[in-house]
Length: 116
Image 1 (cartoon, rainbow, N blue to C red):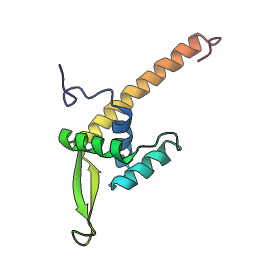
Image 2 (image 1 turned 180 degrees about the vertical axis):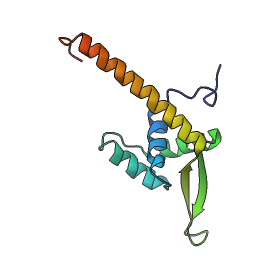
Image 3 (image 1 turned 30 degrees about the vertical axis):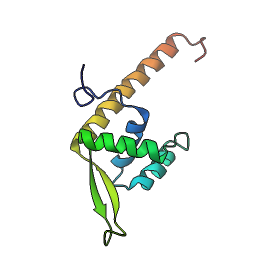
């Protein structure tokens, strides 16, 4: 059986949305949740449990990096960064999704009388 690192596609919705949010820049957890909601027009919201479980997976896969931001330990918070490996996975997934969309549009045009 192949691991997610060997063949990561298709990505789960939370992983896709987290990587997409981080493609705009480094963010802390709450910033990721806000960005996901904004990028999806409010259609997809990710809760803290799902967010941090998937961040842990992304860190283990080495698709994102983590650093601390702030003046000291009391005010420091974790910030996440999409690295080169994660960006490559995101590009591959968006290309795969674009192909799926092209095929769906082609099929729907061949059968214009059918309802989606």
